[in-house]
Image 1 (tube, rainbow, N blue to C red):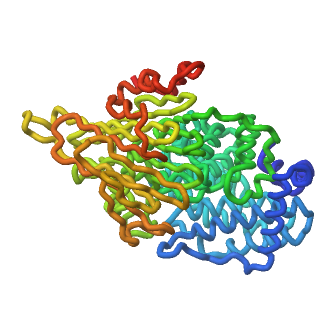
Image 2: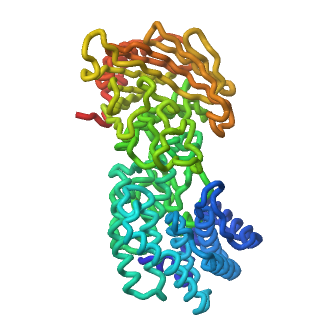
Image 3: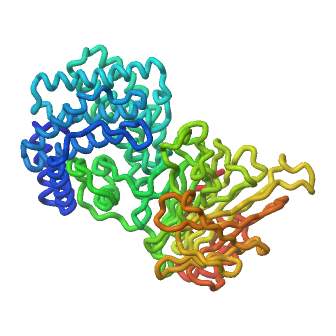
Length: 598
């Protein structure tokens, strides 16, 4: 089935499937109500206007508004057969074809506008006059196809980039070349061949296990345009990881409904229009369930690709998911820590949209976030996407829940490799090693989620090259985490409180240090609703292996878990021996090793 068959208003099969899903499925009915309501509200609004981002000459608000408008109007017309929605869609498309251009200086704007207009060209061609179709084709040629050819001739950065710009720009041009029949065939075919070949560079951001290197927000964008490209050009083969990538979306969505603040990703998850498409293609029961339960307003495409109604599988009490070059998600639930969620960041700082945050840990339970991320910087800040990116606080190592070595940030090419991840009925652990060029210390970090506590252990090991004699010191370090909870000093540790829930934060090692509190100024903390406090431990004069162990738990009782604090991370993989006091009866069975680096 090609794109025209899937999207054409003349396809009675598509209309029948959309209406059947809306009438016979609770999720379908909910999505249909939203789509028709949005379409009716849109009829009362002015036609789309040329609007740039605040503080940046970027036309994406207009391009994305058009995509949303034509998608809503298309599906609303399938649901109701009301011609008013089709007529309004034609007017919206005509409005953007009369713009002076689609802002080629920021070619992402062109690509997303071209994709929206191309979809409209397919969906509403029967409602346009011959002159109107010719005007749309000329706009696609003048504003997208010819500027796209120029971009390729100049080898603009996105042409062979391994990130979302490549996918979006190539996809927008693929759609334009496929549908603009009024443009000379040779002109279209040459660009179509270039874009169809180049898009493979962008696909490299999808990992075989379903992870996406730029984080959950940019996964949504990359997935959207990857699928559109292959729908219009079925000869384009998507990587294996694309079909599994719903797992990445689900895993990095916290139980509270927020998204892991991964690099420049947004706190509010971006719901993908293609969750149903992924469910149908993968045939996975959990993928179909995720289409129905993912946060965010249903998209019109949820009705075009309705995933089958199935019951999802049940996760183990302790659940660990590893994503290559991205990080580890640990989920668990106990009476003390219901719906606990931990994310341990790894991968590479060289990835597009990355922060210098390897080893950062995020933690929430019971629907409340206790260890948070400060989020991304304002995109309008000068140089944020250039040489000055890491001069801004939120992109620095010291703005994240990890360890800073001396006064330096992690290097731009630093990497964190997995040592192992391990799950058991009652606990889960994960460990990494961070390699940062120019650092005098190697950094190993392990996290353990157990019953009523989250443990974080760091080991700082002086590099031999940095120590010329026994008296020479490798440097200092600062351990830190950020929280928007209410924080009070509590002995050498602290108490974190939210509503009627509190956590005791205790420094186990080094015994001679204490946890210090530093409230962030509002201008630094950003737009978070609550105040942000930095909890930090300052370690000076490191000349030998130094361990930092911090525990966050619901009670102040010391348990057998304390044995863990004095064991090196390399011993954790044999974790049954560490926790033998907790192992009784059938629970002595061996756990599942998720990954172990050689």
